[in-house]
Image (tube, rainbow, N blue to C red; front, side, top):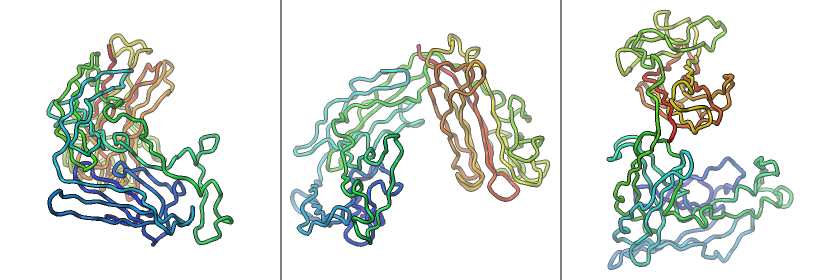
Length: 432
């Protein structure tokens, strides 16, 4: 059990067979749905903003089991229920897990959209299919680049409030504070008193799944799946299924992405400083100027660091470094209308975590006139004093002629900007 969350919530971990509960008895103000910046966690299967209590019955002999009954007492917002009616009953038994599933179909329905279908659930008597866990990888032993697909979208049910109830006609989120210590009619708008959870998974077949694949055309995708019953017992992983993603791809298009040339050739860069002539980028030797890590003999420093020998100017500032490639010239057969994928990666680090002189990367897509027509989300490093690889894949907008990979850092405090990167890659590809 856990506390602090002011509502009744029930959930579970991905791998450990235990139930996580927040009971929400009578102490503390309930978190009325959508009143605050709440988040539907993948580890939580059910949320209800009412007070109540739970009864547990344990059977230690014979058919070992735990029976949990939830009784709801209502809330300030909807009125209290003094008879505490039963809200739900869950029974957890100790037994073997479901039978091993098999992936029966796997392929692309649209460019980049991977669809998978697996066999029917076959579990122990009096059990039901509760969760599905998919894994995708670029290696057959799932030792690298594993994409875990598990949570609210792969569970038999996910009770969460209907977010559309709190959107106006323009799609803006409507938030109205409701004071539980004042008169209800005076302080609470009527549309905030009667909102109840809905099952966001109603009608969803959890033996099937569609996802945007990060695989590069021309590579092989490996997949496997396992099923979990409502007693939180997992099956064995299915046999590994593989799919050859037919297509063509470039080599790495980034010039001097590893800093080993000892210069900044190939990069366009500028400082986030009052003086635009200052240098934002410098290739430094491994261990120089207190930099703790490098993949080879050198690493790139992005922004101010120490004295002039370390790319320093006496005051802190971040920097931007980028390279732009012509997609039509780089990828044979691409004309600007075919599905184009950009796969990009970099090793990045800073000194104290994600927000201590942050460093991040992203990709911009440009048209024939080199105007930006799309951008990926930022991928921010959260790696203290250790270079860590970060990567992403994105489908480019139709009409993309140029692709730009961007490294960017921000100065937070002091005179140094502790933001470094190494081994940058950009690969373009398209399916056949």
